[in-house]
Amino acid sequence: MKIIKQELQFEESLKQRLEFICEFSKVNPKFVNGSIRKIENTNISYIEPHRVIINNTTFLVFNYSNDVYISNLTKKIKLSELEEYLQRQVKS
Image (tube, rainbow, N blue to C red):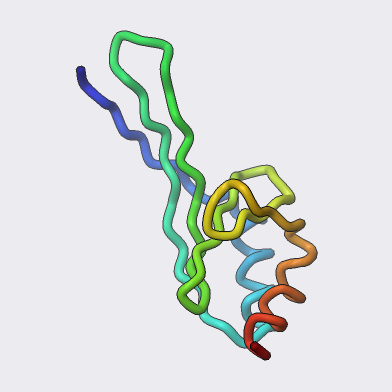
């Protein structure tokens, strides 16, 4: 069984929005591109989300989505709520 990995690029407007939110919140993000993983000769594939690491917390984002997942895919917030979440996190 062979797994094929193709790297995905951040959608530019999404990355700019995240950079702006982080700049406004005075935090430094680290961006890690997601990928598509396919099993050769099957129709099985997995989309690995992009990761944004801020203050040792990993946020997962998908291109063309307005949701941000915190640490895993079970807890999500709207992208518009990320700034408030980061500010609460800094205060704690």
